[in-house]
Image (cartoon, rainbow, N blue to C red):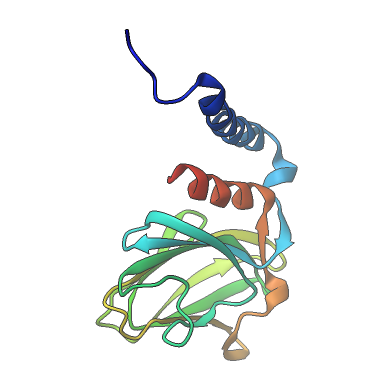
Length: 189
C-alpha cells in the first residue's frame, strides 16, 4: 500500500492557485486594456541571488534612484532586482538615457536592450528616438555582487534639457506586469 504524505484536499488549493496564475496570464495576452500603463511607478521583484533567481518579495518604485548600501531590499551580499513598467516620452525626438551604478545593469526599452552596463563602468548612456506622450515598456535587470556600491540611478536628457531625474508621473506599470511579478513570487519564475 502506498501512503501519500498529504491528503488531496491539502494539495488542491496549490494547484488551483497555479492554474489561476496561468489563466490570468492567458487572458491578459488577449485583453489590451490590462496591459496599458495604469498604475503609478514601476513594479519590482527582489531575488535572493544574482541572475534573477530565488524571488523573495515585490516592491514598487516611484523613481529609479536607489542607494541600497543604506537600505538593501534583500539580506546578504549577493542578490538581484527586476524592475518592469512603462516610461512616457516628454518629447518627439532623441532621448538620452543614463545608467549610473557600480553593479551590472541591463536596461531594456520595448524588449530591446538599450544599455548593458558592466560593473567596471560608473555610468553609461544610450540614445533612442521616442514620440511625445507615448508609453514605452521598459525593464531593468540589476545584479548586486558582493554588496559593494549597491546603487542605481537612471536619468534622461534631450535637446534642450540637461540630464535630470525621470519624473514620477512618467513612470507607470500595467495590471499585467503587476500580476506577472506576483506570479514570479508565487511560482518562482
